[in-house]
Image (cartoon, rainbow, N blue to C red; front, side, top):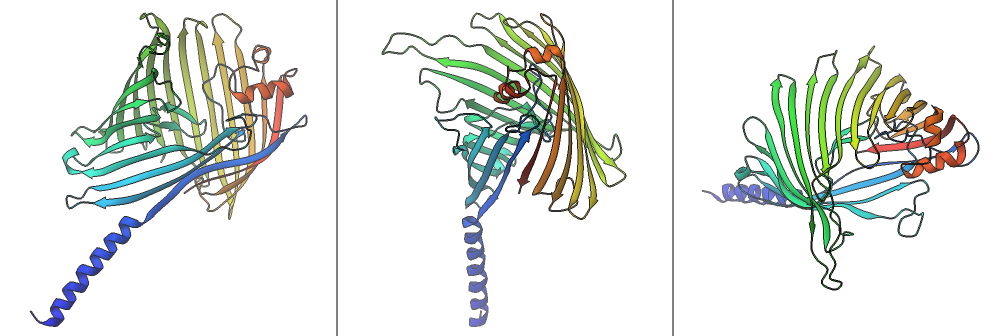
Length: 409
């Protein structure tokens, strides 16, 4: 082979190695954030509205918090078998209005996710192995920000192993580093996803066991109190094209927690349906209906019904108009039925003409109305419920006006 040929081969090899080194050293930057401000109709800071006893709130114009989640990931090795080995970091901030953390109301940064993983591993049939702290097993509904499944924490596992009928995942998860050394919760989540039921439809099955790991404190010769064990089973079916060009989600979930002696402490049965679609090409719509039956030894039985939806209409250029309406009913066996209706009207300027175009900037007006039974318990629940009572505790309605920015990338 002549010198020119050898030079070309050397140049090609050098270029390939340089490209691979550049790819390995590159950092992928993605993330999510939302932040905003507002005032309530009586004067003072924006308030948000959620019916006590309901698992979620309708989120448009109803998020009294900050969320900042930048993600940094990089490939640190690639092997000849096609697998890729990466690390992932996510410093994060979450703070509800009025919430104190580490003795301050200012935003405090912490690491929400820090983990390493190897993906496309041939010995795992193209699956992934991982270990560290991460947001795990999250199955989320968008417009009410509800997690049907979630097992966040510190752990390790294998994920998305192709087993023929679907993709199998298994993990061992524990609570964060703030847990006592003699007392911690653990979870064993399993899932089988992408079980094909048709051309554009699939089934997913989630199963989780939770328990307690504890030991006697050798300094005090005392043992931590026993905590409930529990298990959960969720089945979810997604299909496209049942109604127009949208997607249909139908889900059912059962979970039960037992006391240390095995008696049932709480059990929940949940049914949910979500339908998305388009109207007249300019409007995206999203509707969620849900019912949850709860049997609770300490607080008594209750039933929660929820129905709501959002439309998001493109007007012109970057301008959009959104409407969200949600209604929740909670029927406790030992009390009066309570209800809350929330309506939000919003104008938006977005970087694109699609409903999911981000970043987006919204100006909104939110109005909520509730009955006397809800007013009697208005101050219970999450941190912003106490703020709603401070402003609207003698009323059956309230409203806020505000602005919010949201982005993901």
